Length: 303
Image 1 (cartoon, rainbow, N blue to C red):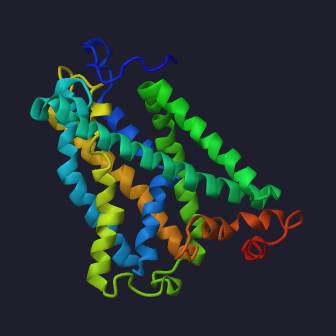
Image 2: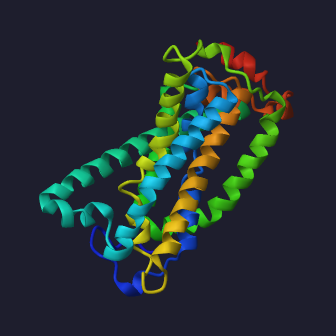
Image 3: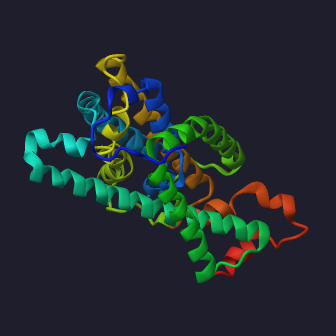
């Protein structure tokens, strides 16, 4: 697979070979990761119960998608990314604002993915193999994830599309298995460890959850959608189909992982931390009791 050749320049018509279906695959497959799942943990950690958390995530996500998705149509017409396209309205210097915002969002999500992914990976390795959790092991795992992120960025859109087609199905199946595995311990009640409503009352806390866990997801795509739709040709695919694909991809790509994070937060009683309780509550530990101590005992000795 060749290294990405296109930066912010326009994509030639002969290279605009993607379809609205590919757009759905990318928006779904690329979001089925711990960096997005962890946002579903926020409402339970704020002190909300299951139904309040779900309503906050869904309401915030739907509201954000309605206003964010139409931005995908800009790059469908300009064949370049949204930051560059904004130069038509804000000029060459003004478009740097979008570029800086996009850079900060990319760095933030990369850091979040490396941090959460590294914590879970090391926790799982520690549980299965007894791998020590020290500065060296954390550095190695974080470095491995960061290197994988760099490789993805260097090879660019085509690698992302190929991986997303597989992840859209594979990760969805794994999340369904996760729901089955954690279902016996699931509760709809608010987690006592959260200490009640974070902001002292239901509605302020619910609104905070709707913004932090729901609205923030679509908002993060404000500068990203054009990176995908610029590979779709308007000569072969109409604006309505692309808009519908964007709506569907964003809703599935954000709600599926975030609601999984919400569900597992209650099942694992993850009020103050997500990664540790998630691994601790996993039923996989019953498979290897002969060669490792009970996981709860190991977690109890970490502090």
